[in-house]
Image (cartoon, rainbow, N blue to C red; front, side, top):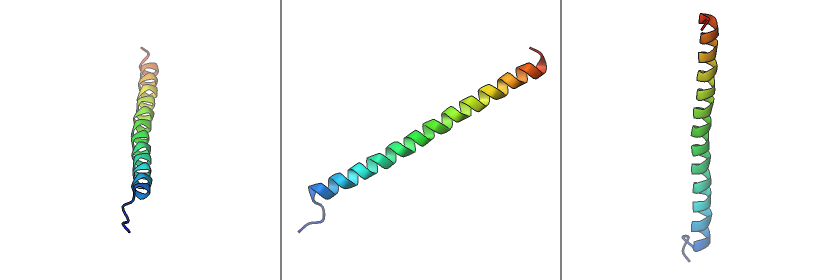
Length: 51
């Protein structure tokens, strides 16, 4: 009997896709946090410079 059955292949692919989606979400989350930090930094600099 083969180890590469439909059930095992599906299980593996589902796990792989879940991990890929998680990694992609982490990248997007980091980008959003960086945008927010940059926005706050720029606002703070404007206030300090009196603009």
